Image 1 (cartoon, rainbow, N blue to C red):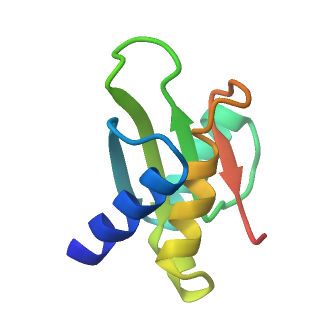
Image 2: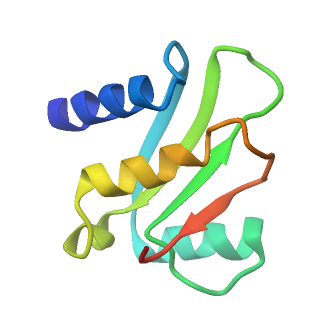
Amino acid sequence: MKEMQRIAKRLITYLGIKGKELNIIFCSATYIRRLAKKYLRKNYTPACLSFPFWEGEKGFLGEIYLNYHSLNDFSLPHLLEHALKHFLPKGKSKGIGCSKD
């Protein structure tokens, strides 16, 4: 847990989105697939899903769902970096999935 916090803090600072609260949720492949179907209308199992909160509470960045089964294929820093890039203010989206990059 401490390692994940260290990695997330470093990436948030690097990406210039420091000072915001972020929820990181580890979940099963089944659960993240349901999220992808519901919010993206896609039938696949992503490694991660990012849900930026563009409106509402200013101090809350959003949520990242990480498929813990994908840690067999990707390192935790890779998944967090990929997911956090979707929080950069380049465009607005309900949720963006990531599979193998």
